[in-house]
Amino acid sequence: MSVHCCRQPEETSRNQQDSRFLRVLWIALAINAGMFLLEMVAGLAAGSVSLQADALDFLGDTANYGLSLFVVGLALRYRALAALVKGATMGTFGLWVIGATIWHAVSGAVPHAITMGAVGIAALASNAAVFVLLWAYRSGDSNMRSVWICSRNDVLGNLAVLLAAFGVFGTGTGWPDVAVAAIMAALALQGAWAVIRHASSELERTDVETRAGVSAPKPGPGGAFR
Image 1 (cartoon, rainbow, N blue to C red):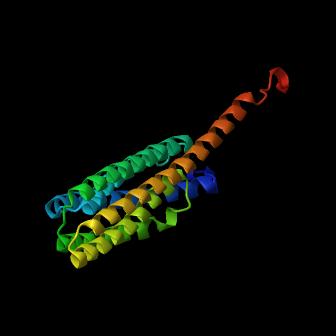
Image 2 (cartoon, rainbow, N blue to C red; image 1 turned 90 degrees about the vertical axis):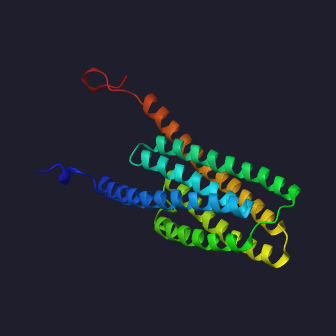
Image 3 (cartoon, one colour; image 1 turned 180 degrees about the vertical axis):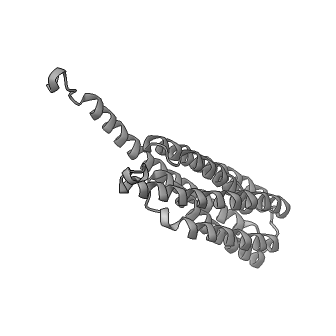
């Protein structure tokens, strides 16, 4: 009998899911890395804080997808620890955007609306593709769910950047750009809290299971429990 015949159905299904998830993550990583470079250059050239914030979000997602690739197939505890790191990264991004938003609000800079709109459309198309690919994993463990939450926030952020571009074009001021950057910061902080809470509950569950395994009675000589 082959080794494959001895595998449990649950193990086979999990391996297949992990394999599909890995392929999706590699695609998402490549898309996010490319969009980070494009948006950061465009954001600096256009003087748009919302584009720069979105670019840093792409960078954070690229690192997060790389971390997810590393822990796929490992025990739940390690996947939950990776999700905690990703949650902390999302929270850091949110705090940075808040600081950048305040600076732009004080300086009164007016970004280039046309550049914002063009790059925003490209970013939305990229993130929409990743969002569709990750949809099947939205209810998985904290590691999978954290990746999907990142993708969801990206799509919402891109829509907000487009609204900011229209607002800047229509008003001739930088306030729509500042407002959207603040919304993106709030999304990042909300997503970070959701990921950290889910990962913490998984870590607590694994700790309980570990303690239960350690405290379980062990059979002594003759099969009697000690």
